[in-house]
Image (cartoon, rainbow, N blue to C red; front, side, top):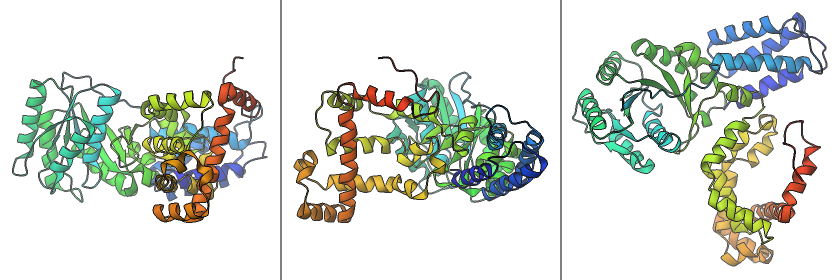
Length: 456
């Protein structure tokens, strides 16, 4: 998300380098570029106008202090105003209610409500140790109830059965009664959507709201709908007392306009981002971190948290012990590392959080694409156990067989072997404390504060 916006903003800042002061003249062109970048990102026009005026008011005449360049001053101002536009701080899910705390999900058909119900139930189970009951009140869409039943089984949470012939408010009452009787912490309610906003849909969800009295009413919206997301948000905000937003399909949106518009339109904070199709692909929304990603500064905090949650620590420890003892790093280990990264939402998702990756050349981004990683894993899967342990034996005829078996070309097999060779050399350097030596060597080459002081 935000790829196009990031590129435009960073290019604008580069144009200000070497100038000693931000003035009416040099800020005018820069703000025109920022304005165009926001409009191309599908940010709502009222939001763009207000944002530009706030940046202009702060930027014009501001002195460049110490070693800062005008570009750095503008970046600081834009960063702070992006955070302000998106909501200052993370708005946590409010579950402070007599159990069960009811979370009602609302939105158009196709916005990702049902998947978001399952993702949220999983997030509550794994991050907050909450026992959730999920229920579908969507009695119109074919297979909607069955879809939620399957997803509930996948994430390991309780599912309340409902049927197409029932009234939605009857289902809601029964589910709430069961959640109370069986001591659930949270009841998450999926509702029917339409292809457009209509009076019948709004009346039904208002009845459900009256029956359930939810502590959280979350508006689920597809980020790729752009300006339409803002219009739909207005309609739902007028009909329901919304408490927050879940922005879905952000992994497929290179523009990011909805993220910058939605709080201004609804008056409510974005609480979660859907960052992929898997039920693990849900992230709490931190405006300051997202602003950093937009401006190419990365999001190291989210990256660390993600690794804490999703890395298989037992496998990682075994590999670390193996490397320390100087035992061979094999293609099986290499494949394991790639699979671990894919389990964390994919390599592109991880690199998106790394500082500077937005400004990386397109060719480098393509190499980091998940489809490229899947291709590498397929190549290794086409090898025999002996070939994975002793890759030096992989010559002409073996390469042809592996390429044919994985649906790739011989040059793809050669590229994999070269990448593995580089990884193997790095692992050898880490043997017997070599990692600490490598980090000490990096200390003088990285920006101040990137690494903590290393003890001998």
